[in-house]
Length: 216
Image 1 (cartoon, rainbow, N blue to C red):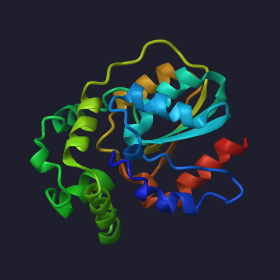
Image 2: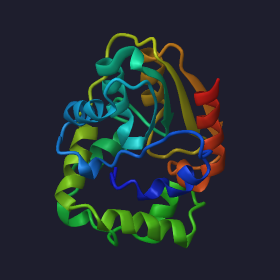
Image 3: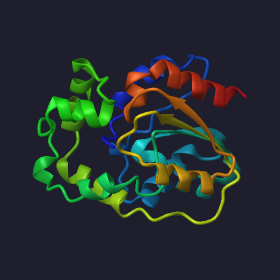
């Protein structure tokens, strides 16, 4: 949700260099709503065929892109993500005042429990805090509202999709994954041990799933 792309460093390092990849930083996009953000990304993609990798907040952007680009999206890999409101915490978080959306507001133990399932080390936690430092609280507030206001998409998409599901994701509930499965009938689920920030704690394993989705 920080939109900086900084937290993908470990994941990118584990993707073979021969695979052309690009991190889209939300902070470089002017649109505020999910659809507006997807439209800007679609313009950047142009006529290329792509495999989308969407983590957490960006799941709905990937869904919107599937509708905009159609067959140009050959596959989607969702990492601990969602296209509808992920659960009760998603709605509650939107109620937080901007004053609370600062890097040091949440203590390490809470971040470690909610985000990392107790697995996050000090280096990872500091990386998260650094990413949050680079985003205005008003921007984070808008994105939290976007999450809370998500509806449940109707209809089905023929795009093949893979879901990397952390075994102990405290932020994305089962119902949100069920919605994904209804929209993407070809969805396959890869369970990896860990918490919501699975791309940060298990970048090698996530990368293997992504590479397999690209090359098969």
